[in-house]
View 1 (spheres, rainbow, N blue to C red):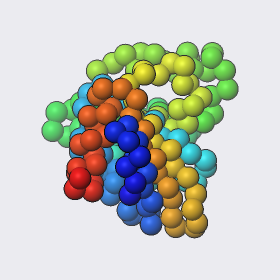
View 2: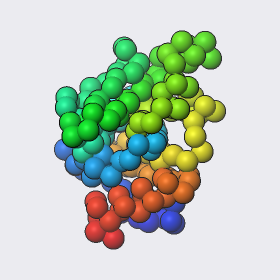
View 3: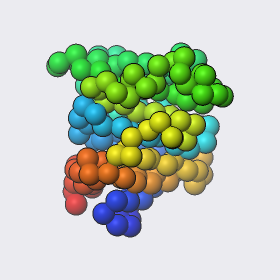
View 4: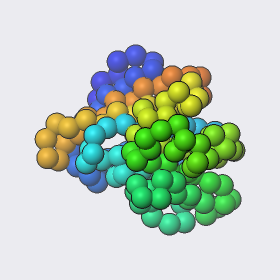
Length: 166
């Protein structure tokens, strides 16, 4: 793991299982209002990371890719608070974005994770944790965590402590 600065951490995951475990650590720390942006090409492991985040959040059901429905909701067992999982891959126009109601979701008191966030980046809060996943080989992926606001910086700091003990 490389800590590039207060705002950025790089890590190489050696397996899908490790990516899920990192997601669990992050999901345990999520608070209402947090925004996670999961970016990377197809097959990089965004949904594996999201599955772990949902597990750490305490979701009542297993996180799956919302590719065809665009938005999934995962209520937390202990208090029924919502984690939204949004997939923007199929969005092609501003009209598509508006028809899904993303503005309402992003304004709601919930935690939100978005796959393909670059497609709606102009709509997103400036305070977000951006996670870029890249290809190393068939089993290994790079994960770059970049915080861009006060809350996301606190989240990243807590995540570094939880996941790596630093």
